[in-house]
Amino acid sequence: MAYDAKIRVRVDPEVKAEAMRILSEHGLTMSEFGRLALQRLNEAKGIPFPVEGKLPRK
Image 1: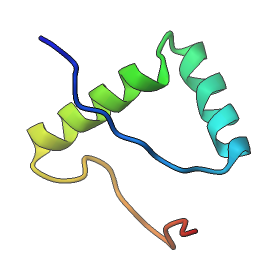
Image 2: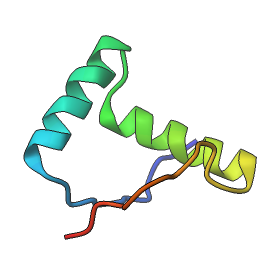
Image 3: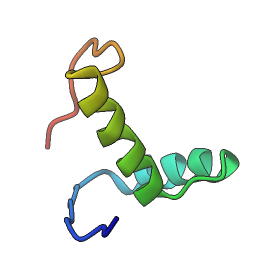
Image 4: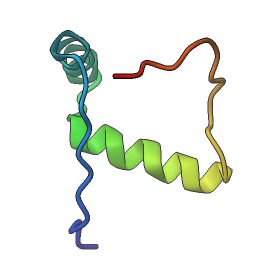
C-alpha cells in the first residue's frame, strides 16, 4: 500500500519531544503511530479512547 497522503500538525515542541520519546520506547515512529491511530479511528467509527477535559488550542 502506498502512503502518499500527508498530515501536518502543529504542537508544542515539548509535547512533541515527550511523545517521540514515549513512542521510541515502544519501537514506533510518529508516522507509524499516526497511521495506527487513524486506522483504529476508522475501525471504531469514532475516537477509540475517552476524550475528557479541555482540548489544547492554539
